[in-house]
Length: 82
Image 1 (cartoon, one colour):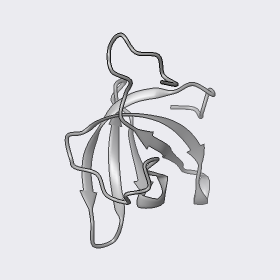
Image 2 (cartoon, rainbow, N blue to C red; image 1 turned 180 degrees about the vertical axis):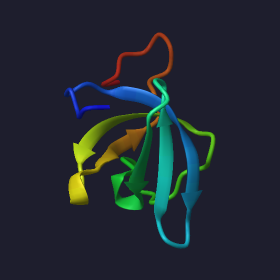
Image 3 (cartoon, rainbow, N blue to C red; image 1 turned 60 degrees about the horizontal axis):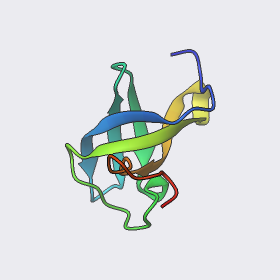
């Protein structure tokens, strides 16, 4: 992965540690990205491993990329905004 392209990506939460608030998401293309609990869009600060999510990619510290704005994908037949 060379960097964000401004598009929403889909993937699955591979792991999440509630105690430290850190997790990993695997994108549909196989890219593995970390995320912090503050990037979970619904504000709950927790998410189950195995959850399907949509997310963006943002620049993080030390030249890494992170998943941000994690949220459930829209239900089939519904528009993304409602």
